[in-house]
Image (cartoon, rainbow, N blue to C red; front, side):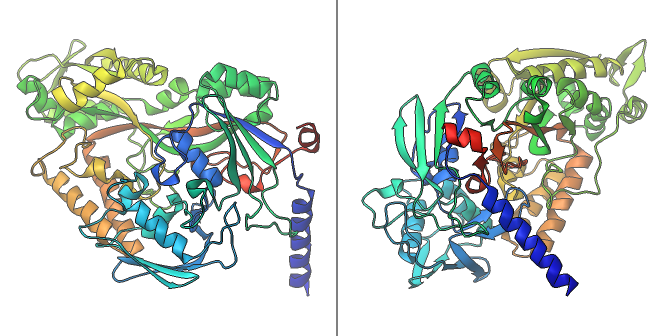
Length: 541
């Protein structure tokens, strides 16, 4: 009886909260550039991806808060045929925004477009496994199977990015299954989204979602103006802000500032290990030494980088997987400690000697190198300067060189005329497959020594085997064990010296209800159909 009563009270409370959500009004925010496309299969830039998320209906959705996959247009799915086939069972009696019926034919049509080599959808790239055509079979009106030429690890999660197109609608990609549709677009100025009258979701009280009637999105490149508009109440949130803006918001209205915790993004430093680079042979010997890289790592005070460079809105990094990635992070690993005594002991094993404040190698060369980073990125410039100061503590002279981005890319990808580099990795995908192009030794993005014909080291050969094995495994436990081992090797060898993981920061007006910012994109509007506006704001818009 007590259990029934508790459940009834909980359900009633939830229903009352849903009933209190203010329907109507206009949600307002900014994008920093106009979308390059409204075709969700061609979305590659941030703005196009934002519109896809707001308008596109997907078969499954990765819950940005729990990081678990949930049913959407599909009620159930099953992977079979050794990871090559996925079968979806679809919701019945759904319609696109223009009234066109949704059936399995639309899923088959979308997959055909997704994998069309003439279209070359960037969204489809992660589905391209093996050679041969993708086969789709409409089993019933509400059931469809898709067979790929080779197994795809984590295949079901990839469909979170695939917005379903209508095979029949004359409006083509403008007919959508998501909570909103594009009603107006003034190039370079704004977009207006209106509530999809055929959206299938309802709240616990039975009211159709989304709550907000329209979404007005201004194109605003200037971050200062965007911040001013937020403080004036002209927009309702800023999806992502940097630490300086966060502190400005916090100082004027602490209730607006949101720090969701550590994100998936990392900042890292690496040394040039390319055999054919124009570096002197003794520097190549330094940079290819694990002891040297580990010593440099131990001589960097990551806690200070987090506290000073990022104003406390970052944490010392461990490796290629952020702690923000709940499932895949290897929790047995810890950030390398700041320990310059241990660093000098490691260096002595390679014949380095520290005398009179100068570190020299076994042949008497004073240890000196340059770190390049992109000009204008104040956080990386600060980190480089702080690392310069830290390494002086073990007798190393560091020169900091800032370059415009094209020049930096030229050096690290073509001429290899550099010694060390600091850059970041933005990672919006939880699955480690997204880092395949970084860790395979044959990859162009294997930054410290790209495009190797054969692995240069035994540990790189082991990583190659790990990445191929996890990509072909359908057993999640096996994949987890393999990725844990990858993280261990990266921690031991430090081809990338991981510095910090930045926090996911955003600014949200108190008038926006049901907002719960998270670390995954989109940070603020991941639950767009649940957001609502305070009654006064809703009435005045």
